[in-house]
Image (cartoon, rainbow, N blue to C red):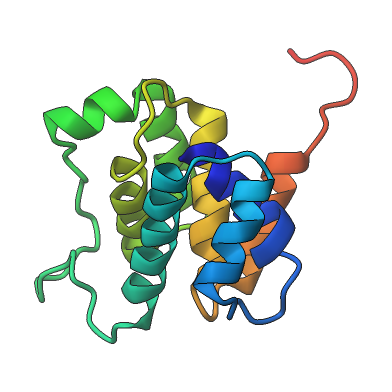
Length: 158
């Protein structure tokens, strides 16, 4: 399923100014690309849920209680999916204002819906990029994340 999401993001969503493609047409394209029908259905449902998260006025993850200076406690399932490196990266992105509480929760929500035996930091970066691409008003954060994802380190690292 994650391969389909990557394919969609790189070849369809990212290249379209407005992602409004006929499901049957898109399914046919994905089948021609070699993906299985059941995985295509799961990936399209994942994208639809992402769109639904950003279209709502409410932030379904947050109570009305102030979340400033709060600490995110991960469930056991989230800890299994998001290892220490992934959770640390999410904290870093919040500290540098690439993610806010709401977008962080959207990322976690979408990450938990990915059916994959293995999930690593690189996969998380792509999920973050997909989420930020789909949230209006997060263009700066998307650009920052894109720079982090495609940044090539030069010289020795200390």
